[in-house]
Image (cartoon, one colour):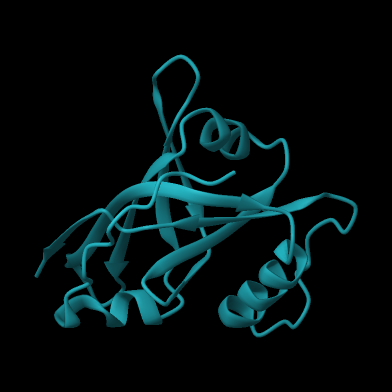
Length: 137
């Protein structure tokens, strides 16, 4: 799944550290009935894009496939009044490399080289372009 090309908004240098640390982000999606749903997720930031991962068929996976636009907030663990909030389209949804990606995230967040979750689920990797960026603190 690919969306139209979207120009990424620059991440301010003052808050880039919040994307480089293993901070759990709050991911907001829109459900089929139009209501919001928020989930904590692991992520990484690379080349101007945000990458996160889930399992095929989960609520967030179904919501993103139906409404491929998300919002995320990364809060400074040392100062809850300092954060970065990002909204943008999900420009790619792929199962290719998704298992390797969840293992990468597992290592980033827990130090474990292999994701400890179920091995029989189909992992999915999502790519977000930061279209709107807001910072505080």
